Length: 270
Image (tube, rainbow, N blue to C red; front, top):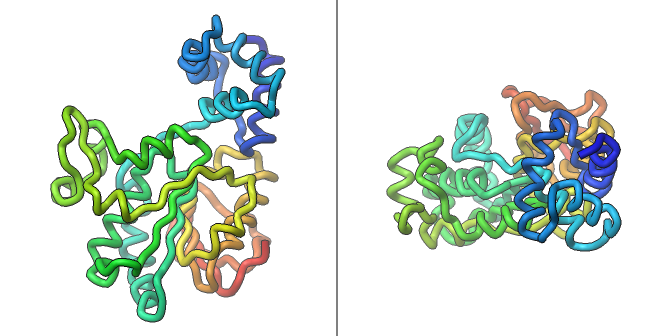
């Protein structure tokens, strides 16, 4: 695959999803696109990319960008102790007057969203139906389909998921493990491009946006952060990855005492 085609692919990925291919070499790009090329009947990744670039508004272009997007996630990754110790007690207080809302943005195959749901369920306040709404979104339709199925390999459930929670919330399904019905029903999975309109989602008490803006160019990352943070309720929490930060001049978000954690003291302008 020539550099000119890689540049054209990156331009398409930036326009459609704010996705930068910086850090990916030619072999990595070909490895991500080759399975899709075989499935769609193309000789190789470059032939696939030529077809997608020739028809950038058709579904093939969407699937190429989807294949290029990283989708790694795990149960109870970095930051979940912060959620348990700092954010969850505040959400419990908020739930005294109304249901609380949590958004897992860029949820990939669902481990993060299910982890949030398990932590919420562990608190008696959120055990009652309707007290906590969790919405999880991702650009990738295939990732959302898999998240909704709730099926994970043995290696995936052994990566970060405590045995007690595995037994409580999952059941064996052949060689896989599947989230039990109560856990699958506790998360509303949706396909969503963060470059699209976000207002229909409503407002949230906590937004988890980990490992997403780090893959975007700085200007697109700043705009995305601004639009996502505008969905926070006053006093709401924004969790970024531990190496991710908001711009210094960013609205009314204040650092909240943990890496990547911010709190909106009042409503954040879009």
